[in-house]
Image 1 (cartoon, one colour):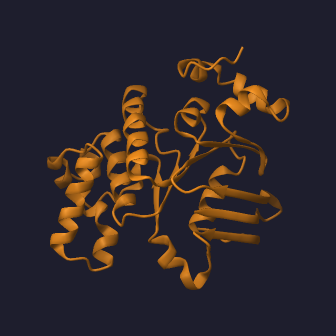
Image 2 (tube, rainbow, N blue to C red):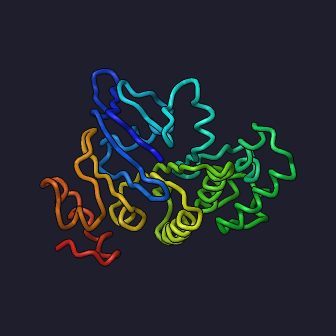
Image 3 (cartoon, one colour):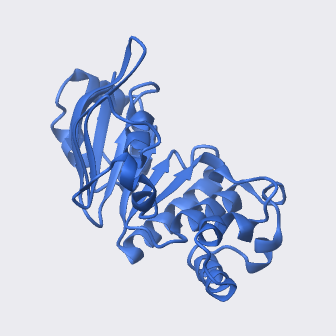
Length: 250
């Protein structure tokens, strides 16, 4: 569904991403993880076309991302950021439906889709008439997810979507998100800094450091066959989260 070939990006003299190849398989969840500044969010923004690579290509379902098709391909991609990234002056339903209204969907079709997504994400229908400031953090994140799903995209990109939530809300939303991904069969790429969360969601985990992919595979691969000492150090630094998953990191 998503393929990056030789993609690199620098900002001034700083290499944010060295030449990188990556494939996200259809209907699977790929999790990008690594320390702050390792290039994972840069990689996600390149996938969406928010920034252009200095070299290499990004392809969505075999079509190369380029200026002339950027808008049409973005309609096939849902994007979720931390705390939902909602417009504060729009009610929840208006935030969810903003792209549908831009594409001039009928009011009936738009309303039907919004209510369908509210049911899918366990969002209270009476909350659709509230502004973001009147919603809890978990509810704002559900609105952000509904907005990303509004056009029924093939691909979902999530940039640390649960990082700002308290542990109980985060756990509930993790369970709901994983169930939604499985039910809809979406291709998902998620950025997180939490190895426990990466193991919970990821069919493929991609561990990054200093703009490079250090290792990719399942959580079991990273635990049992670390590619270099940094992998072991990174995992051991998050041993509590992994013990919650029942993984042995001793």
